[in-house]
Length: 255
Image 1 (cartoon, rainbow, N blue to C red):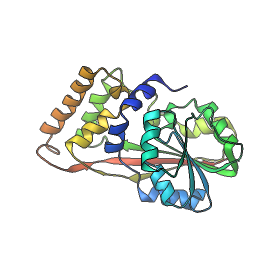
Image 2: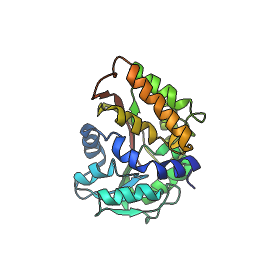
Image 3: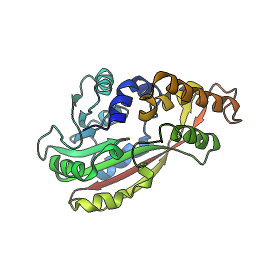
Image 4: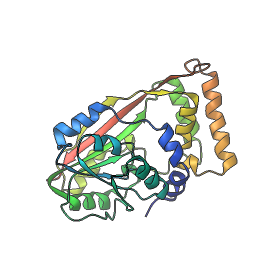
């Protein structure tokens, strides 16, 4: 079952997701290659693949990549981007794949939506012995003042995120509770996005609970973002400016 905010928001916001979300740093992909065998000869499942932001990088490594994504508009965007990738309609809790068919499961910007105990058991089911799980997020750097103010605007809408923020979750404990995974390693990578006002507005519009708002309320939020960028000294009057993120990666293998 998909959370209503995800089903509605991401169906409506798929184009904004494609246009405005940042990708992932090469160093994170290099780590997955070194530690979890990402590359030629590996069968990889990109779970909750969305519009293919990470999928495209996985394919570029030479791995054989399968994608699973429950939102139709996002599957369509992914298929347009990567027509040779097999894309399934499915969820983390009921994967449409066979037992022991995958070497590595990646989840980008998605695990916080899952029923973690059920999803972790399903991921173990499809992984081959010694297979890996990688969970990756791009996190806004709210030590930067305008980015912090942007977060306050977003979090004031509709009571904020309809899930626990991933940085507030002890993922090591969540995974350890399953009992079938080895130790979890966490790594961080800088990932600054070259942005414009419309990049930041589109990034905001792609947020599930904002995208799902009625048109008038959604536009009011986006106007607040434009007003912030017009007045803040780090962004006002600038055609381009850095939008600072960090990429956080949690990875492990099954026992």
